[in-house]
Amino acid sequence: MSHDFARQRRETFDTFRASKGVKLPARAVVDFAFFVEETDADWAAFERALKAKGFRTRRLEDGETVIASVGPVAVTAEEIWRWEELATDIALRHDFYPDGWELDL
Image (cartoon, rainbow, N blue to C red; front, side, top):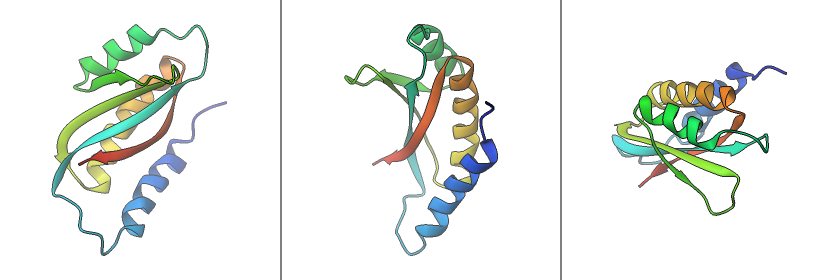
């Protein structure tokens, strides 16, 4: 099954529309969460690929999740989506799937 990037993009842009009236910083670090789908996924290759594109990575203690951080970047739907799409594309090629993002304030 192919990933629905259009739906994922809509969700990111909807998050910004829903946050109208909320004071957001101009710039922030953004943490993208990815969970492993296949037991034989190559975690190290996934993290290397993310780092090559400017992300910092860490593994959560749950043994299933990688956090890919970038920034500080502009806190706009367009800028966050640009990084989210890039990280998601890398993740899918390494048997990981997106599980949202948040600002690291």
